[in-house]
Amino acid sequence: MGLRRAAPTGASAADLPATAADLPARADIVVVGAGLIGLSIAWKLAEAGRSVVVVERGTVGSGASLAATGMLAPAAEHEPGSDRLLPLALESLRRWPAFRDAVQAASGLDIDYRQEGTLVLAIGRDEVERLRFRHDLQRRSGVEAEWIAGPEVRRREPMLRPSVTAGVFCPLDHQVDPRLVMAALIEACRRAGVIVVESCTAEALDWTGGRVTGLRTGAGAIEAGSVVLASGAWSGEGGLLPESLALPVRPIKGQSLALRTTRRTGTLSHMVWTEQVHMAPKSDGHLIVGATVEDCGFRAGVTAGGLYALLEGARRVLPGIEEMEVEAVWSGYRPTSDDDAPIIGEIAPGLVAATGHHRNGYLLNPATADAVADLLTTGTLPGFAQAFGLSRFARPDPVRASA
Image 1 (cartoon, one colour):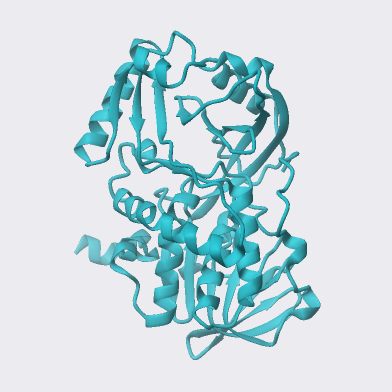
Image 2 (cartoon, rainbow, N blue to C red):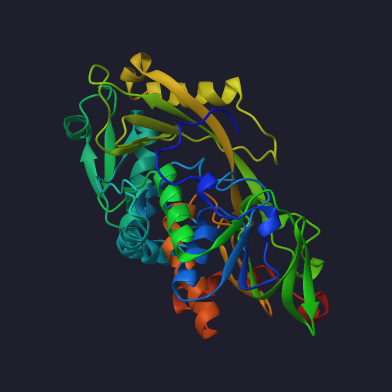
């Protein structure tokens, strides 16, 4: 994965109470995947009084959750073809303050929730035209976004190059620090009694009478009332699910880096997006630059080409990065479905999916966690999540289609 920023003080994976030998024989809920989505679902259900076990093939957050930038940016992310996803994104953003308050109260840890908004920039006529098209789309979709001229952009962010021609300001786009969110979730899960087992592979589902009743793992079998698949980019891997329930999810690799800012180098006040990169200032003094988009499977590592693209993309609008120390570089795998939208809901009796969030995992997390918790508590998926079931990928019956 590459060298990452140092972990924050406080909760860590080492604080989790379970080892493979501690895997219980039974739990109300078994969650496959100890990333952001899996831990959030586990914590919500444990808070509601359910016994929950989380099994993780690697280490906590090792897929996309600790590699992410932490953007909560439905406006900046909105683009042609994403109209279906926008209502879910806005609903989840609306739920974020309550999720923030709850996880901070449950853990005693801050997650660096920042609300300065996002500036999307353009340089030159071609980029301005494309940004104008995006702004028109935002306005037609009811997304709050303000067109601003170059001088006003530079007044708001004086460190930007004079060549920045125009921008769109998205005031409702927020951000968090993924390291702090994950630390808080780990601690909240620990206090709620969630058992998390790392280095524990999910090998097979147990079925009884057409219903999933448990999970066989590398550490043994566990009986369960329900199993939740939240294994991110690995959700589409063969072996665990029958072909009829295969999840159309694949990994999209992303490389990112952290720059250490100082009083002399200065930093940004907002998240800044360009056509090449996005930059997110964090309260600990880091400036995160991300992220490449590479459809190359699980090809690990950080490449010279990837880092060059990030640094050159950032330097194009922010010359001050030349004086900033590169403190960490890393890569991760976004879980991407065939239509870049999440898969949420029951896919078989006793089996629930919560995966495929592409680059919107942090944004969509509160809505996803609430939807799955409601489903497993009441038996009904909330209306805001009902358009994101696996059935939308069903192929038409060729005989019926030709009739």
